[in-house]
Image (cartoon, rainbow, N blue to C red; front, side, top):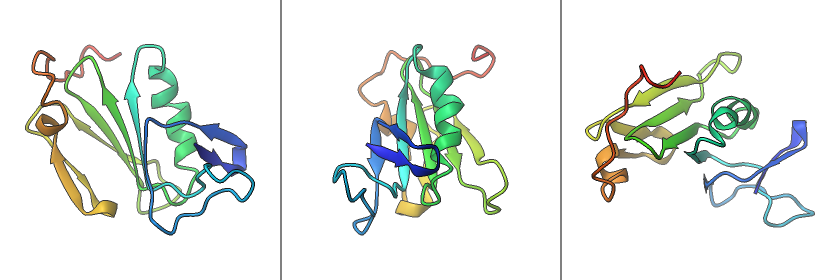
Length: 132
């Protein structure tokens, strides 16, 4: 679980990456206060919240560098990267095909969508015009 203290929100991202010395809530030892990268698997029932409410809330945490939204009905990953200027909106990087490479600077890693979706060969590649 991740706590967004200013809003007193507890969130349950699908994947959380944090540093070894990250801080946890003193009252609840499994509640992380300093996540680094957060990942959500997008589903029809969570799409609006994952792309709006959660994105905004997650970037209220000063340690979050990247928020990844992985689509399950197509090969697509939306990467929100913390802006250099803290008052700016996170930068959106859309990855729409298996050759697209996702770079996570904070972790010094890079991977392709082909690696992420390697067992899902039947999924179509991402398209923007159908995502309204």
